[in-house]
Image (cartoon, rainbow, N blue to C red):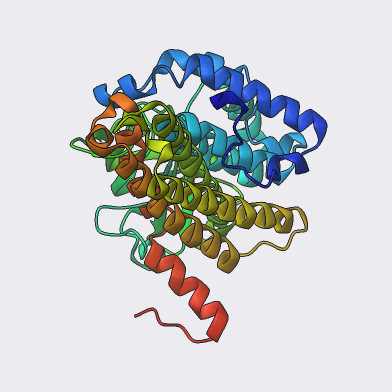
Length: 387
């Protein structure tokens, strides 16, 4: 019975994909159902990253889908499906492919691409995006404290980064540092095994426990000029990457809601109280409808944003709106889902507790709700309310 019920994509946005994209998306779902979903809670409980899955993930051949000719809508729905199966695997995928590999495509020199791009696309090497610092998150553009000092044909890096996804095990990092001579921000392809690089796992997390976030310290790290990103000359060059990743976090918020709806609907149908299924109670049905409505509204927003991307009309205010709107809907959706499961909603056995906790990370990264709302407010009024 359950398999015949409609999904949370109640209005069928997926039907807008080309037929070959729908087929490929089904391949992704089949892979996730076999290789990720059955194991995701265990990985999360143990806070361990499943390195053995990387060759299988690479075999999907989905690195930077738009670079391969797929639509922005398909690219977004891939992130939603990855998140639906496991937010942590989706986050790994986004950090590696949509930040590190995309940066190689966009900003790498021909030499850098020749040395690294194919291996990165096929996950023979893994990458991270080292921007955030211990004292600088949303204000890192103006407050970046990590420095790069030119020394002949090399650079000397000093400073610290925090919350670096994939940071404990990655081979390379796209690392941002302030040029001590010019004051501008530059990007570097940092070999994470160089002398002077220290990586420490951030523990005690209540969200994205499978993701290996790291504190990274840099002490007189010497890096070749050939590993400076040739196409990055200022912090403004990050905005293209951050715009795309912010939009993809909106797709993660969609995936979180799809996952919460899947679990809550199945539980409501199968769980019996007072002699009938939970789904037979009016309040539970109202909650499920609200969850579906939030997911559908979020899908609608993200589908339109994907269309704008295809038209070359996406910008930071629209990306900020997408992220803030969908994550706000997500927070309500996962809370309703957790409530439907009652006491079982606070243990990971039924997956909802994991979905509920992971949503808090999605709500925060790529700009908090408040920061993204202020970006939209500035676009609406022409007046900046940032202090």
